[in-house]
Image (cartoon, rainbow, N blue to C red; front, side, top):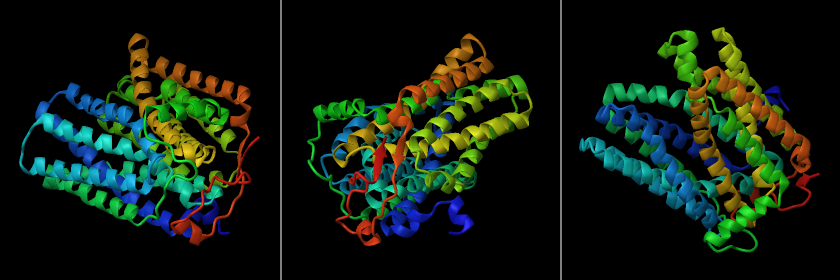
Length: 435
């Protein structure tokens, strides 16, 4: 094995053609999505010149995610997941086309724009739980973490490069071509999903509905490794989410320079990309539970350091460490959630994973702003980071199934991974062991 393979674990791209196609298409789609994010922000600002309305974009995005997320999880356990993601991805492409048309027609209607954003968010919420189950159905159990790391690396790269290129397209050609890039990129993602093998739920098929969603929550409650993993993520996001504090920290310590403010987010992205490029050092490790706990604790401590730090280089270094820890935590949590859940419940559990990932940061940023308003930004950062580390430490001590969760090596022939009858990668007791 080469040094490159040990650092960046690309086994999933070699072992499964279906996963390789999915990764390429999803990467292009994620990159195009960044164009839409920047274009919406600019269009709302141009129409209203109000920070209240630009802030409302987050609310318009978040509410459908919370409302339709559990519905998507229930559907994912009741129908072919490939079909569900095909339909929702097509819906997102149509919405991106609608955004392009409204920009070409110069409607300048906030109601139309927000309706389209709401629809896009609803389609994403309905399809995301099913999409999250794809790696575990296409890859051997010991490559699921590597597959998630590759997906996260593509996301981090799109976050770093996409908005900058979107700004150039907006400046040169305007809103409609920028939205068109998102629509075309969405088509690439749709083609990749169309090429996937059928993925009906294995074993007993649940009916879609509220009762089944509640059953999914009950299942999580009975699995300490699962609820402990979600609790770890919530401790990190609810208590230590720093984004809302960046303008205040920048104003207090660095004169409010806009260029400096932009580098705060870039530092986190650089750390995330660095962790992604070194993903092989993590994804080949078996102790996923211990890795997630360590990463979440590191995230909290690094952000507490940001609260103390005075030199700009130390702030950026701590943020880069936090970004790397966040990437490791997200990847290991994703692998644990998929591998610790039987296929019959995987859609509904993935829905909870999706909601935790979407709602936790939003509420965490609100908490950070509230604490900073009552005290100061450094106090909010330090108290939140240390509280996060303390709670993660308590979980590590009290939740043994989480702490000792182990991913065992497994094999899955490429023909099976690519074929329509691919076995469930988490179905064998030898593949996953929670000691």
